[in-house]
Length: 310
Image (cartoon, rainbow, N blue to C red; front, side, top):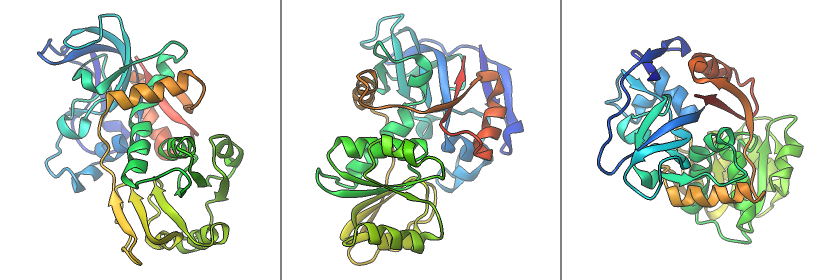
């Protein structure tokens, strides 16, 4: 089968189209013929070697990729052969990536793709939507509270806005220039532009929410003085691989560690099928153009997820 291997750390050019054997059937696993995967910031960080800050033993060769959509071939679990599924592969645990034609995965990480959701859209959903949901959980968000979401134009931020609004929270979102209407459409109550440094952004938030927000979810990795936007005793959730802001005024700083959860993903996909949530796909490329997909992602020239089709 075709897969994208990397044999060294470096730029997109280290991603190599190669032929490797399909994974053999294994007890407790499902084999899935992949129809789509997607490019995430963690993929770029792993490829370049930046993730060795948190995974010191990480070393090539490996196959990148955490998101997948595809069709069950065989295996254990509740999914019959031919079932369309999506999932979040636990790449941080085993480095068994999804940039490949066939993957072997624990069925607990999978959810059936409902009618009305195509495979390309499903491939764009798992890691970002689940991370966003679990960030809000980690922050203890409750209905009626106010949450600040940075990077709301991006994948994790966009999902955090939608999930928070769906939970009955008031959402203050930081959007890229030109994306204000899009972010409003996700359910944000207040949309701020990303201008100035962290301190200036915190001041803008305090102007909009004088008492400070209950929770900050920070996919953009702004950190630092942005903690001033949180009320005394609130929570600041760090997502990106960046230094944590210094805690102050009883504000708790917590770092999310996303966990693959097939049941949660099933709920999110159902919301997509029902039109309650939406995923943003910006570019579709074949798997064999993974290097170009990484270049586009690093250039930040695409608004929305980059999906690789197989």
